[in-house]
Picture 1 (tube, one colour):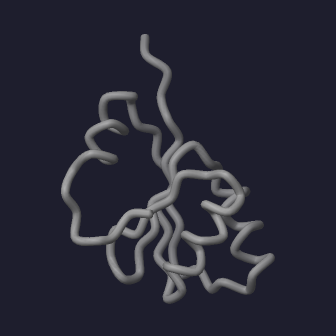
Picture 2 (spheres, rainbow, N blue to C red; picture 1 turned 120 degrees about the vertical axis):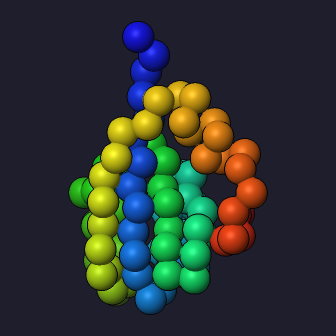
Picture 3 (cartoon, helix red, strand yellow; picture 1 turned 90 degrees about the vertical axis):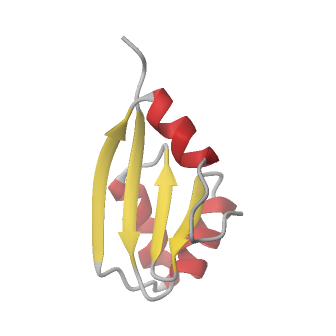
Amino acid sequence: VTQGTRVVRVRTPQAAELRDVLTASGHTAELREADMVVALGVTTEEVGLAAAGRGVVIYEMTAEHSSLEDTYFQLTSTTRGNSR
């Protein structure tokens, strides 16, 4: 059994700011669309607290659990968004 990775998808009008807050906190986060951030290895509680601390509005937040293989493909696939 492989260890999975927590994945949190967040829809926000302040996606770039949320990505910056999460990466500054040591989390892996990337833009997937203009209003979508995907954060790896983080809980919804951690994302919510980071967003609240900076006044970032969240429209939607979804927690998922990915396998190590799924996470690898997410990080190495070509997406429309920019990664940092």
